[in-house]
Image 1: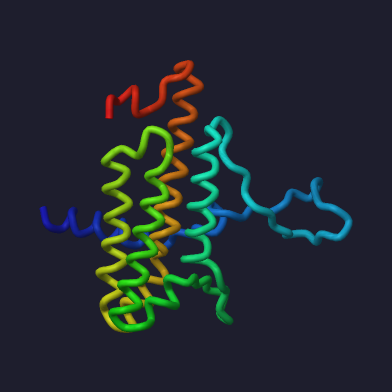
Image 2: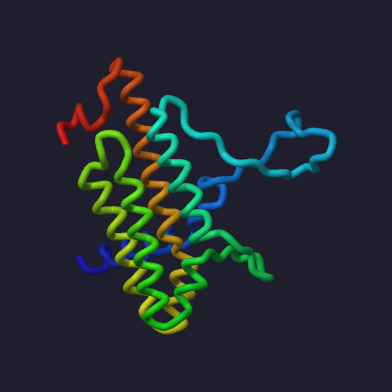
Length: 185
């Protein structure tokens, strides 16, 4: 019994660090047929918002995307690794981790402002990401490196975006009722 559980845990851990939030979060490559005269192949642009979101949800998602991008992916190191403000601030022992925790909780608080709020299971996932990020960050140096690789704020943004996409898709399919109204959350 212990062997299958540990294999599953190791597999999930490996998948966790293979996660690449850059493409999902804010940036898309521009297709060749849409390039202008001055743009080179491989040029990038900001990712479009999902179709069917309300004006408030679009505004909140854009704000959360921007904040998550700056907290997790704002700078590129010499070795190609993207580091954000949360990773740099987290290098300061204890105080930096507390500041990064505060910034991550602000991101979750912003995400809660969508229409009809977030269901408890989504909030649980987001708070679990923030808690893991904070707990690992307390370990000197090694924890900070894992923190930089984990990118909890980007993960929370992805969770919010997938929820909003499902909600908008369900709203279009059912003719107006949202996912929360369907689930009675």
